[in-house]
Image (cartoon, rainbow, N blue to C red; front, side, top):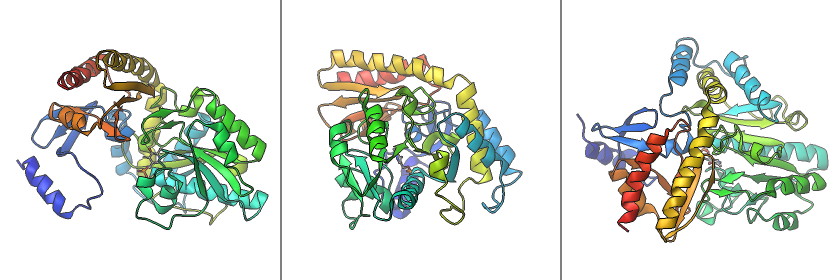
Length: 397
Ligand SMILES: *Cc1c(COP(=O)(O)O)cnc(C)c1O
C-alpha cells in the first residue's frame, strides 16, 4: 500500500500549485463518505464543492456512465447526440429556458453567457452596448473573462489587464445597481446565492427588483447557478425561490452528479442571437457526460432528493443555530437548503483542519465563513455525526 505521505510528496513535485491542498489522498467515495488511500473514511460535507449532490458514485449515475461508455464516448457536435438532446429537453421542461448550449465547466458556461449577451445586445441595441454589471463578492470562474466578471480583487490580482466592460456593485443593493447602469450596459449577472463569496443569500425581494430594473432599462438578466442550481437550495434551481426568471442561466458543478459538464440555458428570443459558428466546444455535450447528467437530473427530480434537501437543510440550519446560542464567536448562520454558512469572528482554516483530522470534511470561504455543502441525500444520523465532531472542536476554542 502506498502511504498518503508518498502521494503528497509526489504531487507536490509535479502538480501545479494552484490549490492549497488538505493532506488527504482520496481514492474512493460512496454516498456521503470519502475514503483515503490508507483506508480511513471521512464524512463529506464539502461534496466536491457542491458537485456530488447525489453523493459519491450514485448507482444510477455510475450505471449510465458504464452503459454509455460501451456505446459511444465522443463523436463531435457535427452530429446529433441522443443523451444531449434528452438533457436539453429535461432542462427546458423544468426551467424558464428554451435552448441549451453545452460545455464542460462553470467558467465556460459563463463565457458562453457573456458572449451571448454581447451578441444579442449588439444586434438589438448597437455595437457600443457590452457592459455587464456583476456583484461584489461574486465568483464566476477562473478564465480571463470570468475573473474580469468576478467582483473580488484577490481573484483578479496579478492578471491585468482585465477584459473591459464590467462594473461591480454591492450584492443586495438595487439602488447601487441602478446607479451603475450606463448607455453601454447590456446585462446584469448575479448568483442568487453567492457561494464562494461567503454564502450570501439574495435579500427578500432583491431579485424581483433587479428583474424590474433590467426590464425598465432593456438589460438581460443572467443568473449564475453553477453552485446553487441542480437542487442545492431545495428547489431544482435557486431562482425558483424568488419567483423571478432570468433570461439566461448557467449550470455546471452538480449537473452530471460528479462528471464535468457545463450548460448555458436561454430563452428563445435571446438564444436566437447564436447562429452556426457563433460559439462552440469540442467536448461540450458529449455522449458520456450528458448520459450521466440525464441520469443525475432524473434522480434529482424523481427520487425525493429535493424534499430531503429541504428537510435536512432545515435540520442542519437549526443545529448550527443551536451552536450560535452556545458559542459567542459564531456571528451568523445563513444559507438556503443545503448550502449553509457559519460566520465566525476569526479565520476558519484551523477548524477545517481539525475537522479533517477527526473525519469531517468542510471548508471555509471568505476567510471566516465555514461552509456546509453535504450531499443532498444526507441523513439525520450523518448530520448528527458530523455536528458532534464540530461541537467537540468548537468546545475546545
Ligand atoms: C464554481 C463556480 C464557477 C466556476 O466553475 P468551474 O467549473 O470551476 O469553471 C462559476 N460560478 C460559480 C457561482 C461557481 O460556484
